[in-house]
Amino acid sequence: MVNFLLSQSQQAVQATEAAPQVIKQTPFSPSHSRFGCYEEFLQTCLEQGYQFCTFPELREPKHQIALRHDIDFDTNFALQSATIERQMGIKATYFFLLRSSLYNIFSPQDFENVQLIRDMGHTITVHFDPSIYPDFHRGLQQEVALFREIFNAEVGIVSLHRPNAFFQEYDAPIYGIEHTYQSKYFRDVKYISDSTGVWRFGHPFDTPEFKQQKSLHILIHPIWWMLDGESNVEKLRQYYSRRVDALKADFSNNCIPFRKLNGHV
Ligand SMILES: [Zn+2]
Image 1 (cartoon, rainbow, N blue to C red):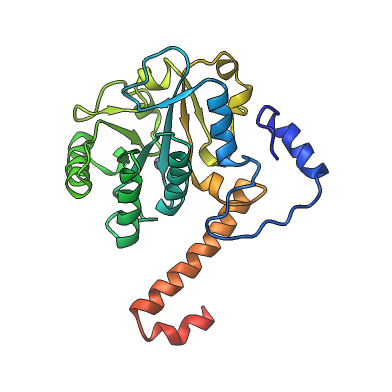
Image 2 (cartoon, rainbow, N blue to C red; image 1 turned 30 degrees about the vertical axis):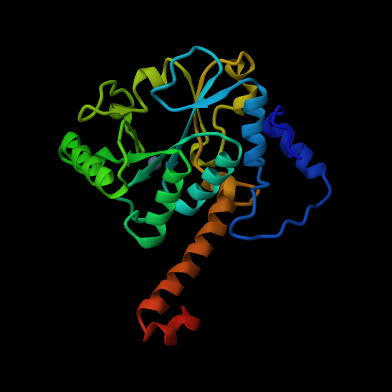
């Protein structure tokens, strides 16, 4: 059992001292990674007196967490975290890429996953990469129109994918729509992120803001929590292998000649 009130280095020491644990690997097994179990992470936030809210609701100086999920790799991990949150009565905001080369929200499976997450009561909206447009206002206008149409969902806020320094400082709405790097969400409340699969600025539970129950903006990428592995690289290795297998299956299902090759690639 991971103790979230310990630092990562303390957890690592505990992990090496603990008896080896055999964990059945399935696509939907809970994570026992160094991040710990996602349910326990959320439970500790609840026990600390926090309530989870949407971004527009994030107004109080204390006791609120806007829980944000930027989906960069795979909607299946998003569905897993959404299911856990729903079971715990927690609502989160899920941001999806429309122009990703790693998943496609128009594909049958991704489309269904996003719909299921919406139907659980979570907020679904756009994760926007402004760098691919000559006019990012126009680009967002197009993506929002498409997202609203296919998911019948309002888009009140977006998050930016890998924002450069310009967009991290961009404090105005884009195409009239708020984004998560505006000061009210990014500087006026404590921002905590698991980007790249590590707590780069320390574990959130070690921060003075958490200890004082101050309101938080927490960015969680479900991929780092839903895969087992001792490190971010180990998790990526496992995930990459799984994606290669899925790609081979898709090739086989869509192209009969590939089936002759399948055992050799
Ligand atoms: Zn992103």
